Image (cartoon, rainbow, N blue to C red; front, side, top):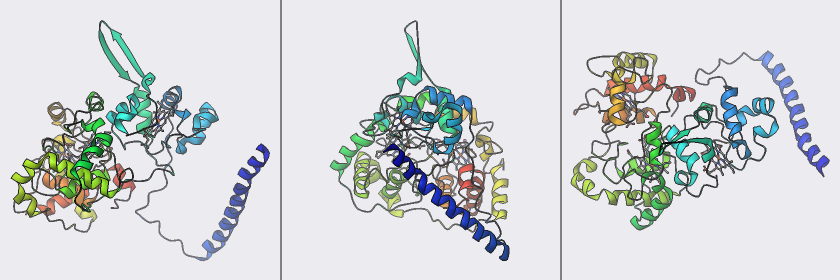
Length: 405
Ligand code: HEC
Ligand code: HEC
Ligand code: HEC
């Protein structure tokens, strides 16, 4: 049986290899006759996942390979630690491409108690991967930094990682508050807390890691908007739940929950904030800010670069740093005030990364984290499009996607 199994495994490979060879020969003949197409400027060369033995060792020592694979490092893991380390029986998802998708806070909370973070997770608690230091009644739990760094370094997607949706979505139908409340307890409360005040059992790990904690969504403190109002519209909330906010701890629920279930959650969140929604009915009536993206050109990006460092009007560099890396002169003070730093616009994923999305972020700001820059009469909108184009051109993840939507 085993031999036959092996033959079956080997044979298609041989067939594929021969076909590839034939194809290469045919392509070579055809290629000689045809002019070579210009390499598309938008498609970067396929990247190889960087392998760091020390970081990988932390993953192997923690036994994660018992359930996970890292398809982009299969060869390196096998060579360094033997075949099983590459993921012999993948019970959990392939971890290739997980880097930067979630904050460190998310990973700590997930390793500590996966079920707080992912409803009905089958992953067992990984508490041995933390070191508990118990001294004089003070119990400090120290995460395995090397393991975290390993996970965050896996920035080249494998075959299996589906990308999260992006862009604005319309609430497809009015939802049910009662159904939404039930879903919230099941899928959201582990992070956002039973009353949606941002204080679920996972929240402490976000604070410990210095990451933005789960939002207080029951206390009129939501920030991801497309309109001038103190709260997002129902479409905005629906978009956030559908798309997630990559690079934070807020996952996409596009695949976990149906359109109808996400609508029910919106109804529940709206009900929690009913007083604010009623109080600002006019603003919501008014609808989203106008969004007419210009053509992205090298000139537009260059103009954005100048404005980014313009000390008078925009002064983005004071917080985000002259190169956008998040280390401007006001960064430390901002971090102290908020409990989390200004974004590293180069290495962090943009949580709302489309051109229109970054424009909305810059126009309307992010609550107490960052002011909105769109003037009341909208006269500086051209500046903000230039800044949005520049920010996206800086960002590693957006550039890798060729700054596509
Ligand atoms: C007994 C099997 C098992 C072990 C051991 C295990 N995991 Fe998991 N892991 C899973 C399963 C099942 C899931 C899917 C459910 C979830 O996301 O919690 C998962 C999910 C994950 C995810 C989320 C992946 C994604 O695409 O969202 C990460 C990250 C992860 N595990 C890291 C680890 C690390 C690091 C270790 C070692 C310290 C580890 N796991 C050990 C079973 C396991
Ligand atoms: C693993 C933890 C986690 C889970 C589970 C989770 N969230 Fe979140 N959520 C976050 C974090 C962290 C943020 C803040 C992200 C940011 O602004 O950077 C957030 C932000 C949000 C926001 C945006 C608020 C704003 O400022 O505009 C909404 C809406 C939201 N979550 C709804 C939900 C709903 C509904 C569910 C369940 C279906 C859910 N979340 C599940 C961690 C989580
Ligand atoms: C006072 C400090 C400060 C200044 C000045 C500032 N920012 Fe920010 N910025 C922040 C903080 C803090 C956050 C994160 C807020 C949050 O997550 O709630 C942020 C977030 C962002 C984001 C969101 C990225 C994402 O995840 O989608 C973008 C884009 C951005 N800033 C660009 C700019 C640009 C462009 C300027 C200048 C026009 C600017 N910022 C000025 C502090 C600042």
